[in-house]
Length: 312
Ligand code: MLT
Image (cartoon, rainbow, N blue to C red; front, side, top):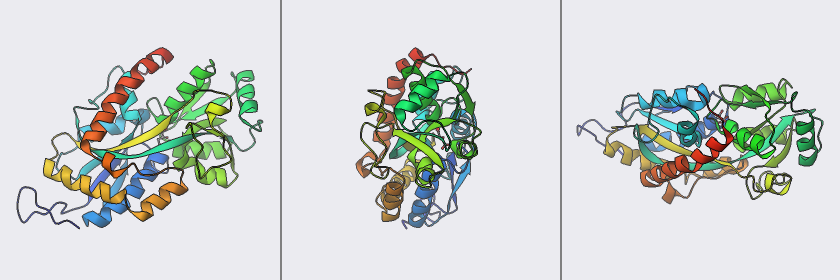
C-alpha cells in the first residue's frame, strides 16, 4: 500500500473508501469488470473500492453523475466504448466526455457474442440470420439503452442485415440476460464477460463472436466476419476516469494502482475465463486513454450518422 499525502502530510490518500461509479445495472458486464478491478485496487490502496451502479439512458445518466461528483479522489468512474459513442447519439448530453474528466487509464477490450434464448429456432449463424430476416416484425432484441455497447452492436448488426428490429432496452445487460434466460426476449449482442457462463451452462444459444479472431475461452464460436457478415467487428474497450479537477498526485496514485491490478494474477485469470484480458499496462495511462477516447469519438461519429440512430 502506498501511503501518500495530498494536501497535508498527515492526510495520506486514500484515507477512506473510494466509490467506483458504474453507469449500468449490477450483474452486467461493466459491473463485472468494475468489481474485479475494484477488489484488486483495494488491496493496493488499503481502502475499499465500493462499486455504485447508476444505470439508465445507455450509460449517460451515470456518466453525468460522475462528471458532477466531487473531484477529491474518492469518486472514480468506469465506462466503456459508450463514452465515445454518446456524443454522436445524444443531441443534449449533461456532460462533456473529454473535458469533464481526468483520465486514469485503459483497462480491457472485451469481445461480444450474438446470443439468443435457449429455444431460439436456429442451429447456426446462417439459420439465425435467415430466421431474423424472415421474422423481422416478430423478433425482439435486448440492449442496455441508446449509448450502450449492446446498442452499438445491435445498430451495426441491423445496418449489416438492412433490417430494423424491435428493441427492448434495459438498465444493463445483467437484467436483459434474466429476460433472455426466461425467453421474454429473443436475442442480444453482449460482452463475453456477461455471456460466457450462460453459454457454458447451456441455458442460452450462442452463434458467433464479434471479433475478427475467435475467443479462446469460447473455441466453438465462429466469428461473425466468417459466418455471414463479412467485415463485422466490434469490441468493448473500457477506461477508468475521475471527475475533472481531481488532483494530479491522486491521479498518479490511482494510475499506479490500476497498473498493479492489471498485472494481478487473479484479475488476469478471471478475465481469461470471461473471454478477455487486461490491456498492456503501458496503455493503462492517462495519455493513452485520452488519445483513445478522442480517436473513438471521431471514428464512431460518421458510422452512427450513417446508421441514423439518434436519441433526444
Ligand atoms: C452494454 O451493453 O453497454 C452493457 O450491457 C453494459 C452493462 O450492462 O454492463
